[in-house]
Image (spheres, rainbow, N blue to C red):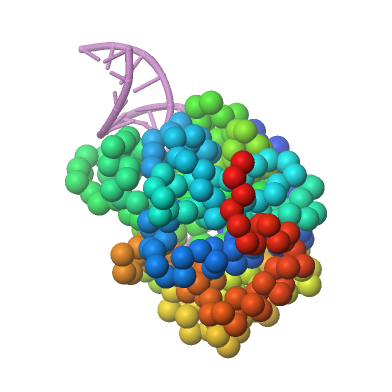
Length: 319
DNA sequence: CGTATTTGACCTGCGC
DNA sequence: GCGCAGGTCAAATACG
């Protein structure tokens, strides 16, 4: 994927660690997707459920922690270290998705929290929006969603090819923010990666836009969401690298029934940035991952039960 | 040589 | 209007 030639990325010491280190214990990713299943099975658009209100925070992390939002987490991660209840929705019918792994949450586990940004919502503050340098003043904002990942590496390989086009120091944060763009010609998806100033072990990745092409890199079959089996059983073999895949919806839809799990030893988180229906939230979240059939839910829970405390799976815990 | 990253400069929006 | 901060560009540089 990307050529990492210069390890000394930035002043960020953590950037040097290998992703394989991180994923070896990165099961929490699956937890995220399973939990929301219990939420609203389709009664709500995830768009409504997850809202990023103020995107104009000085840092994404700030945004996620915006206190203005009443805590109504679907599930509250019982995090030993940092509480990652992020982006609590402001409306009753909203919910937040956060994930965490409860066990082994010590060092190198990876936690991811997903959230979506609505265009309308950040109307108020458009200061951070894409500004095509005045060429197209009324450019539409692409759907965005961000997630937090407990990771030692800044840039997670999600299967797509990204080219870094900028890096900026972030106010109030010792860690710089990196800007990436999908290298595919017709695809204008961007992503920002920054490390939380509050918890340096947390990487906040924000995707903006929708891939107009299938995932170019499907390392050992990166289809579907990160399977529990892969996470726990798999060794995420370092060689392949770690993937954090954000595949296209159709892609995933065709396979998820038949191949609920990766063949990929590499734990892979799948995301799809689709803007279908009334929500631009990743479609996989609207499908099995988040709204599974009872049976699949059960099955998932079967696995989850080994991982997550019942409280986490069942009810939101307010903190 | 082609591709990706680095990094300073530039642009834009917002707050004072 | 000015300064600040975020976001982007593009030349220079590094790497395979």
